Length: 248
Image 1 (tube, rainbow, N blue to C red):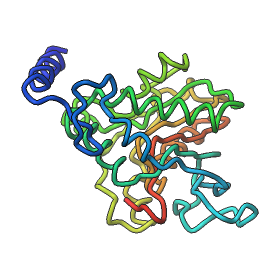
Image 2: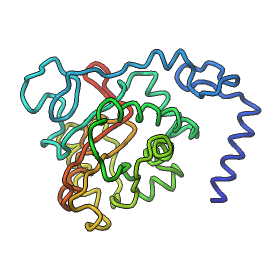
Image 3: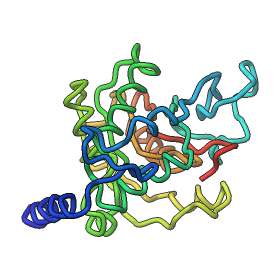
Image 4: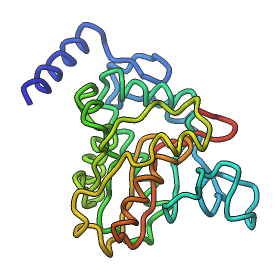
């Protein structure tokens, strides 16, 4: 707590010395109420359907096969998956500034994208709880916050969702997956998560939330441990998604 207070004070001092800039384009945002400038908001690419029925990747085949070329290997454990915007260069800069650049204030505008996604893709669904993808304890100490959980704090205020961070725990660290094949990614995250209390899972419906989806292997593994403990229905929602024309 003390460490977080010192970090907040340090951030405020830095903002005075070096006025905040938009993480997407570098424009001065010192006079704006939003840390992301209006130009970058307008340049975000919202994902449009049709989507793969299994992994949620945009596709041109409405009645195509159950699995598309972008589905995780093996078949994903989640029941449905959607993402809000394309992981384009602007969104990469924004999320990088959020996760690694100390710009925790970006959690609030990013949560607005999640709220939009909930309204568009899951308006008719009932979820008993929303679960952020957990970080390993070593990564959490290094970063000082879980980017998915931080966004959900604001989403909870806006939409009144029940957020449960302690249902799933990451029990081992995983390697960066950007250069891995599909099967290597699956192996990398296999066995990385466990359920803390199965009695809080059985018969319930969950929405897993994260910042970026690349191949879907990580959220699929989280969905798998929830399903193994008796979850009735598991869906996924992420802010951004790497697509075939904008890979990670």
